[in-house]
Length: 113
Length: 117
Image 1: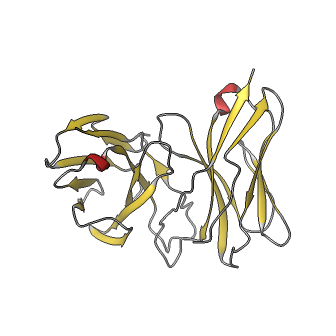
Image 2: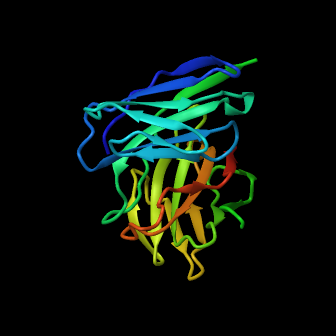
Image 3: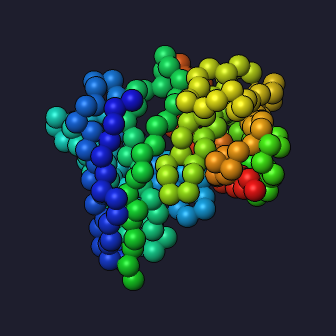
């Protein structure tokens, strides 16, 4: 799996958009970008994933650059409950292989009232 | 619909002892993975089970072993516990690979906090 680089920590004001960057310059053509988050003392929670097009779901938006070497997770209106560690992961699509997920240190997002 | 459930939630063991942790996957999922998360670190992959066989393994010693049952539930066994085995142990379930028409992201349980003293 390709390696990712994320800032160690970020702050965001409540109600504002939180933009979490991730660099994955060695990503290969068959690798997807996944985002998970882990709220304190809980298991990681899947947020969103994408290949090359921007994606949006009820939780967040994922913007992937055209060269796919970086991406940004956007929480449009951050709340205190979004305070968590956010993990950016790149890995191949699961078909044809098993789903080992390699986590880094992640970004600790603190939403401030 | 129950998600991934793990038991027990907390456990204290003595160095040298053996421990068994249990995981029930999300309904409909047939693949179970185990992760170890030390304090302040991201989860580290231990191994993955599908069709009752270990399919992939991370960089963990043979003291770590597992099992998957016909109902897809799984156990993680750790022998000869070391102080360094103290961690949050996470179980994740998903659909098997090859089922590309299904959403294959992993769903995690709340974990078992193991403390070795």
